[in-house]
Length: 270
Ligand code: ATP
Ligand code: ATP
Ligand code: MG
Ligand code: MG
Ligand code: MG
Ligand code: MG
Image 1 (cartoon, rainbow, N blue to C red):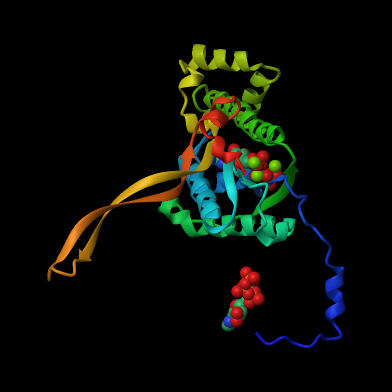
Image 2: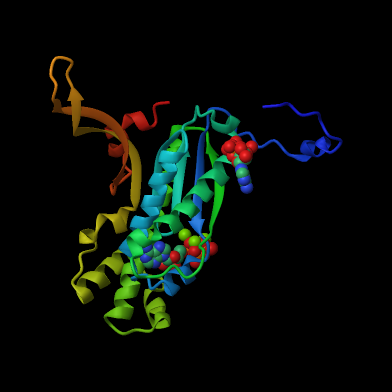
């Protein structure tokens, strides 16, 4: 590339501010759908949990992990996803705006790109948007607590939404009546309403709804057949070869307890 002489306008670059992320910290980018309450209504999301929407969110998050560098783990629920960059990442000199904008734009374009794979005949009515924020966590415990916080939020919201929509869809309450009924109730009360009025054991609800989705890298063995030509033979021969590939795998498990981190120690290692 030809290096160009500096123009008299070059000084405006100095107005850019430094946004380098502190070294050695976990860099978390969380995105969230803009006004998805309305988006869900307009696109006839099934309440309280639309599987198409949840799977599409996860497809987009997998794309983000595959396309961008240094993401160790991601966690998603509802219209949000969090991406955790390795604490030693040097990607884009750790510039916060680069991390955040690449994550959010890659996610948003994927959401539109893959929409029809999940929603089939349901037309996308307008271009959705996502907000992003970036937070640094200096210790492993801070990071675990962050992810626990998001999963606890998933649990609280999903329990509430499950009862709320049962009261609306099965008992014919208006949304305001259902809200009043649940005012001041504790988790135990909500479990009890589900069990006694709707014969639902909350613990048997799908794990994806109750726990959200964790994305991690895992080694998988892929067996494929390859055509090779041996020097001494004239015919091509088919042989089976096993390749180890690292893939982004979705899990719907508890990440609040220590068990998950004991099972996958490599996530926090460097
Ligand atoms: P904001 O722009 O402030 O984020 P919002 O309307 O997106 O506003 P959130 O708190 O992010 O508010 O809530 C997300 C909304 O999207 C909720 O109303 C939730 O019910 C709906 N939603 C998201 N995903 C699904 C899904 N898979 N199934 C059903 N509803 C969903
Ligand atoms: P980075 O990710 O660092 O931005 P880049 O490849 O996008 O890498 P840029 O400096 O942004 O690098 O340059 C944009 C590139 O896209 C140039 O090579 C340019 O030739 C090409 N490009 C963009 N728009 C057009 C266009 N309308 N017609 C032809 N080429 C284009
Ligand atoms: Mg919000
Ligand atoms: Mg939202
Ligand atoms: Mg949200
Ligand atoms: Mg460019």
